Amino acid sequence: MPALVPYVAAYSNELGPRESELCIEVPRNGVPRIAYVHPRPEDRDAHGNLWARMTRPPEGERGRVMFDCMDPLRQRECMTGLLCQVCAQPAETSAGTVFVEWQRPGEQGPKPLDRITTDAPPVCGACLPVSLRRCSFLREEESVRVLLVRKSVISGVSGTLYRVSDDMKRWIPSEQDAYSSFNKPRYPGMLAQRLYRKLRGVTVLETNGIPPALLAAN
Image (cartoon, rainbow, N blue to C red):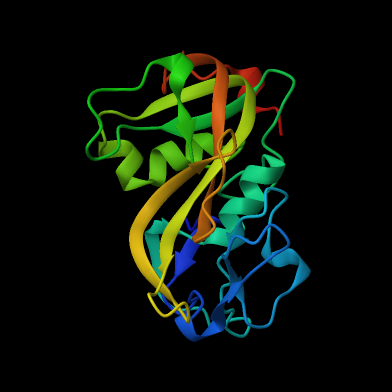
């Protein structure tokens, strides 16, 4: 049986920007921020965060699937539009939206249901049972929880944090997977790679007892 490849999965030959593509930009507020040497309108989100550009190989020439990584732009697309991370179709229903969560390395126990912030896009009703059955990680990870979410709110980004070199000529990576909340001033040296949502009105579903109406919603 062929492997189930989620839409958001990264591929080995889809690469992020080189440091030579980055420059220091000084906007009207006078605070230096990270930018591309050749900027494009879609490079920044509504909060001013610069997003990682990704190279795209020719159609049919994708490399090895990296199941434990997500492509930044496909992840952002699914999180923004509440699209299924597997098939990229709408995942939001009148009953709510399903997110699959688990305990990340370093976390002390499962997060309380009213404090979950996730970078994992939702899963639609059609792809949920297939994912639970065919994804080895979801089958074997004991902390996996299927969550029915009444409302979710875009809340921040994470990515590589850069600092300006002493000579003010280049950016130097200083921290990986740094998180920047939209409720706080953004980092001028952030190269965003993940979009996050806060989950509200959360109910835990039994993996062997998903309501038929939800599974048939799509």
